[in-house]
Amino acid sequence: MAPDDAQDALRELQFVGPETAGVLAAANVTREDVTGKRVSHAQLVEYGVNPGVAARIRREHSLQWSFEGGEDLDQRAEQVRGLEDDERQWVAASYGDDAEADGSGDATAEEADWQAAAAAGGGEPAAAEPPGRTDDTEEEDGEAAWREDSWPNGRVDESFEREEAAWREASEPTPVTALDAVDADAAAMLSRAGITSVRSLATAHVDQVADSLGVSSDRVRALRDAAREHAQ
Image (tube, rainbow, N blue to C red):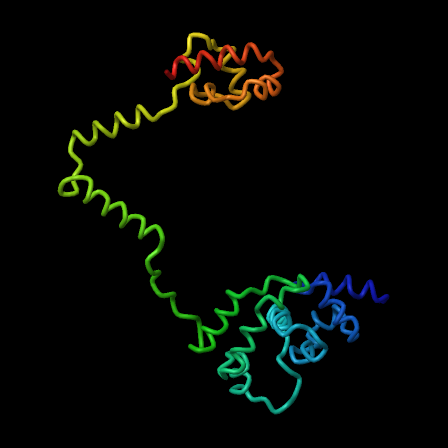
């Protein structure tokens, strides 16, 4: 098989990107070697595959850690769990940015944290600590304090509700259709320029609006002047 074909075949494997495929092809490792479990995790690392990527490939294809003899089940369990501190640090480092440098899968820092937590506990990581105070919590507290300062006993009576309703009504933008000079056609025309309120029409740039709508400046100026008179 030609080198390029061999790399293309390798890249069909999960977690094998261009750089990893090149490393494996240079070591004469084929796609069938991986799917047939004829290569181990230790060999992948020895050939130059990033350790984090090698770990992902090992899990995906159920590869052995090593073909070396003399490893009993307890020793293999230590390898899988990463009970030694140095190994846990190595796993976390391997799953950092370098593991994604060649596009070889989605090894992430979150998975590194999961690996480290699982290794420390010998199993699934414990549930996360309850989240601390957030910006939303602080904002809610600030609003509560504002209510205490602004309203007697922190209560909202009918007078405050009426004042708030009046403030909201006064704050709502007045539509351009409130102007006698603006009929339905003129309102539709202005909306194409993003002008829907009396305030935005009163502050509009006549020439720019006229150019954007393809109408005369005199027509836009007349509408703008009507908005300004209404605002006075």
